Image 1 (cartoon, rainbow over the protein chains, first blue to last red):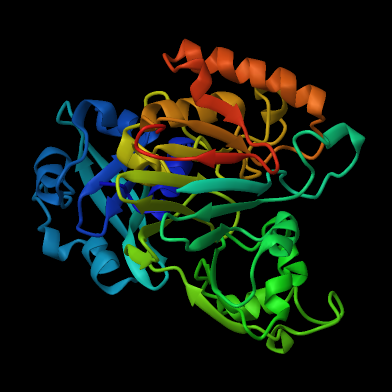
Image 2: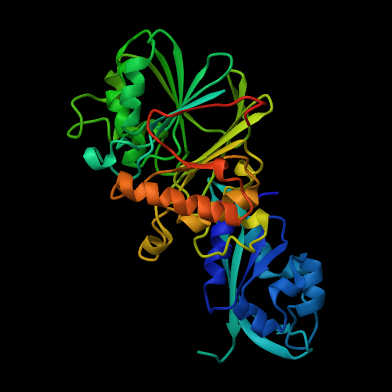
Length: 129
Length: 286
């Protein structure tokens, strides 16, 4: 099934950036993450492919500072997808080797012809310039 | 189903002795269905000559891929539009800023032209191309947004078992490698997949493309790769650069055949669009 053009262009953009980022489709599926995100997560996109939010949560988090998993319903990203509004949050993620990183994440909705297509999420380790 | 090329040039008309054989008019392709319905793909300057051959007391469908001048410039000189007996339906891409009619009116209005859109004597309607398949005459038409600058559509027209895909301005390899990108992530792929004829942008040679990345057009290698991956049966290279002379395009054709056969294609299944050339499509020839 062909992806919407806006997601195709977003993937092409993200794959050219050194800013860690991932792409979520309108159903909440993690449709792509770039090499920079892969370096932080310890897995390349080509290794894991598309993931549901639940699979992503089990593998990488996000987590609270105490290491508790944050339910999908409570994620700022959920608001981005459901309400079409941007969000910014400080969270923890766990990489493939089990190390936890504190990150800041900004999520922006992708809307075309007034139809939500998904979201772009940029994230970076706290303290890194 | 019959195709006729009335303009195969990109960007700007390029008349002159250097371009006589391939032609200097900008994008316009006539697709005549078996039931006699004419579908006109784009309204570049080539549509002027097409209009001179057409009967006026009929219904015509023009499918615009986008509104860059090389795809609409001929509208003002399309003779059937000046006859009240003609019913003209113009389809094109939706855009958030203004309606299709209002955007075309920026060209067909003072001071660029002596008349306004509303003054065209024909029975005229403007329609956003639907995102779901619709019917024109005996054909099913599918439109989808594709990678170019600004809102741009590609079209696939299917009549019976035969299909033509028209992607005249398309840069699917922008920021991506078409060699290993999954199909679902390739712009225009679904439209082109398995088409009997793919008419595709091939404005640049591989060498020229390096200084034109992001301009919305394809280089030869990317066009061949796209067509090969989409499994099209016949590829027509289109939207020739206005700087490309007939001699240049002859040599370009040689490179195209070489590249196409290297991908496993038959040498007679790739060609350059030539103004006034016809392609008759039937189940036997496809």
